[in-house]
Structures are given as C-alpha cells and as structure tokens.
Image (cartoon, rainbow, N blue to C red):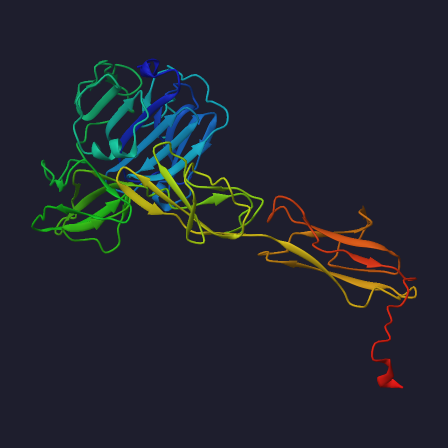
Length: 466
C-alpha cells in the first residue's frame, strides 16, 4: 500500500524490520524493504549482500557501513531500524548505531509507491533467503531508547505507527496491518497465488513471555561523578550480559551493576542449554553536566592557547559559571570569560540543578619574540651582523614563518629565524603562526646597526694601564 502518504512533509520517519536470514547466493543482493515498485529500489530501501552486510538508500544516496556490527547474523533474529529526520540518517543493526550521516541536500519528496518486503517488485530479482517477522513504519524519528524498549514487544496502535505487519499471522493471501490505518498487505506480486509467494514460518519468538525487569525502571538521573546501582533478576539456567547503547559491557555478567554514564542499558539472557536469547526491559540513565567538562577555544594546541584567543565552556542558559585563573575567581557572568589577556591556568566551575563540576584546565600563554645580535652592532666597519630571533613561551613553531623588517619595511625573502646584514638600520622581526596565535607576534626589541657609529670609549682607570 502507498503507506508513506501518511509520513510528515519534513521527512521524518522510522522503518523497523525483524529479520532471520540464512544466506544469499554469491554476488547477489537481497532487498529487505523498498517503497518503489519499479525495477530499481530507490528513495527508501534496505538490502544486503551475500555476506549479510546491510546497505540503505535514502533519496538517491546509498550508504554502506563497513563496521562488523552492520552484518546480520545467520539463523537468529536481527533487528534493523532506519531513522530519518530532515537531513540526518541513522541506521541501527541489533541496537548498534552503524550509520549516522547528515546529507547537505534534503532528500526528495517521499514516494507513495507500493512497498515491497523481502524483495523488490520485479520478479526477476533475488528474494531474501530467510524470514521476516515484523515490519513497522512510523511517521516520526524514533530515539534509540524508544526503539530498544519495544524490539520484542507487541505494539499498541497509535497515530504515529502508520504501518504494522506481524508476518507470522498471515491469512490466505493477505497479511493484516495492525496499525490504525489497516493497510493489509498481499503475498507475492498479486492477490492470486504466485510461484514466488513467501510462506508462513513463525520465528523469532521470545524465550519467555515475561522478561525480567531491571530496577529502577525507566529514566534515572544523577550528577556527574556519582553512580547509581541497577539490578536485574537472576534466571536459573540463563547467563546474563549487560549492554550499554547496544554494545556488551566487558565483564558485566552479574545481577547488579553501578552505572555512571548517560545512555541506554539492558540485559541479554542466554539459555545455557539451547542458546535461546531474550532481552530485559530497557532503562536509561541521564548524567547531568556530563558534557560540560571540556573547555574549548581558538587556536588550541593540546590544552594551551595564546592570550589573543577566546575560551568557551558549554553554553546553557540554565548553567551558572565561575571562572578561575591560577585558582583565583575572576569572573562569573557567562559561559566565556571577559578577560583572557593575562597568562595563567584557567578553568570554570559550572553548577546546574544541584550538581557542580570543574572543567578541565586550559593554559593561556603570551608568546614573545626576542632578537639577539651575535656581534656588537656598533663599529661594524661594513661587516655583516647576524641577527637571531627566538620565539619564547609557545608550544610549537613548526608551522610558522618569520618576517624581518628594516625601519618597519618588510625585507623580501627574509623568512628564517636568522638574518645577516651589513646595512645600517633599525631591525625588527614578526613571527606569524595562526595555528597557535590569532595575531602575529612582533619582536619585543629592535637592533640598531650603524657602521659609522663612533666608538664608545672611556678613560676611566686609564692610569692603571700606563
């Protein structure tokens, strides 16, 4: 059915599939989902290669994640979710994010063509060698927590669930749509019996009807630096493995765990005899000020910055800020300090909703450039004077260049750290390296050369030498 006519005009939708694949012929691709009935699946499609790697197409662009998590496992249930919101596309495979991409150009209008599941509409194309338990279509971009919390659940119809086919409940040539829109699907290409019609095969059922509950359930909140204990029920004959944002937590195989990072958590139980797996409820932890620990600034080299740059803390109108330089409070007005023209070690203390953190420390330095003559510039008698420029208190000079000047006029080609000249004048130097400091650094001293300058003689204590 042309179900995507119910999708919102701002390109916000979610496609979910539960797939049990066995294999694909070498060199072939099997389409799991497409909303285009032509020979080529486009606009929105999900397909895989003979190695089980998932690909997705949105608009005219196809994405192929290379991470191992993007491969479907054989002979077990795999959950796939494609989430599109405006320019952002996210693909989850078995709860792991494998694609997160922003496309500069908005994808074209959604096709309201017929949806194909298990292969594209053309009868000459390869079909999936496996089974599909469910197809779910939403006209909203579902969050990772929302997707995880309902992977194994029978859904309750809602206005945003615009298509819901439980494909283990097929009657005759039709598969009922359990959404409010009741767009029943047909097997094969027509309502009649076709030679390539799929067959009913119930798979992917949970091992237990009532999976154990993690407590505390739902969303919990703590301050950064604190931790919270979560507990899951022990099931006799089953092993346990805790997961964080879809990835197994190494060594976390017991009923209790202390958590201190924001994210989505759940437990996978595995039957020790037959390997059957099922998942607990999903819980979420929000850690306040977790993302407010890092200072940023212009022209940072590690944790160092020139005095001509600006420092920034995480910007939130609900935060309060106290800025410290060398341990002394000097500003408390905004997410950036008003005065950073003095060298020192800077950090910010941020408070929000009863929580407090100190950011990392950023060292601000003032770069200096000094010139040293290796011979006395007076009484040169026309001899060259070798001038050497030294950059002080800077993390690096790898990418900078020197610019020598005589009487404030740039000397062409004089861009090294030393310069030799027999000519009279007032010599200065500028060091330019905008990777470190925003503005060029001028020498703190000039060297005056005058080959005819009278000798600086004195007659003090001259009698001592007669």
